[in-house]
Length: 285
Image 1 (cartoon, one colour):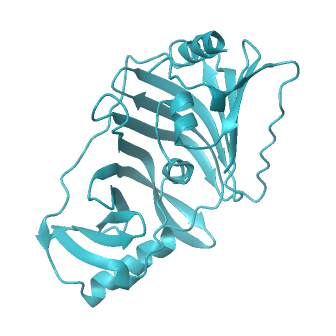
Image 2 (image 1 turned 180 degrees about the vertical axis):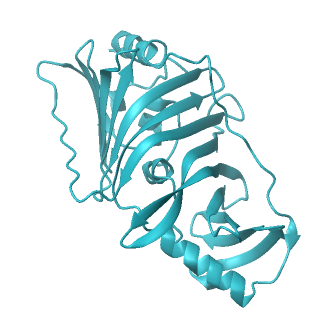
Image 3 (image 1 turned 90 degrees about the horizontal axis):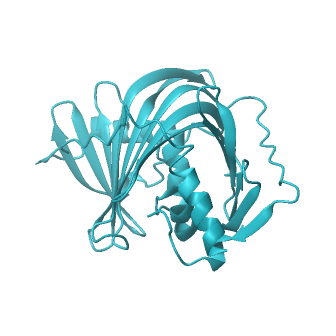
């Protein structure tokens, strides 16, 4: 089983994720540093952005995805489908002809990855360990899903805001959560969420995101702006010391909240099944 997983993941992240001549990496920006009071205007801005942050229910689109870990740099071109049930399907294509080579289904509690060339099926629970084995990214599924959607939901009320910092037209709202702290970076002119910084209860940075190149979408009769480019920086103490992992998502096209979106994933017949939960190694990392 270990040999089969090693062969599969080595192929996944070397052959069909090829094409790194124009490799993209995360661009990190300075966050506002000047402390200011939470004014009525800034409170209204926070509430407006909170409403927009919950606007994406389903998605069907095509995107380039670049992944960089301490030991790998890879690129993948994918058809991405997200559903209201929190299911996600990613179909990976390779080569000039764009042939599908891998079909991945992620559910809140499980995941299935079909190596279509070798007819192998990887199955397991949907948790950070297995996401790392498949994608090289140790992330909670909810956060990964939100990142692909291009917007992080703001569920914290106004009284959860503990700090407000400003720099020109950008303002950051620091809110306390059950797991630690989140900072939301907002442009006061465009009223777009341009970044998110997530820290744990000890103040250690876990995830940093930046959103760029906004496009207009009409959702429920309202025009909203969502990013075409999403940069995600993850800090993982479990790997290589700092364990810094990068993810860049650039959408070529996408439809938000389509009237009909059915994620139709068929389990392959006669495929060799590999149980990710029983594999305690990360062959390609």
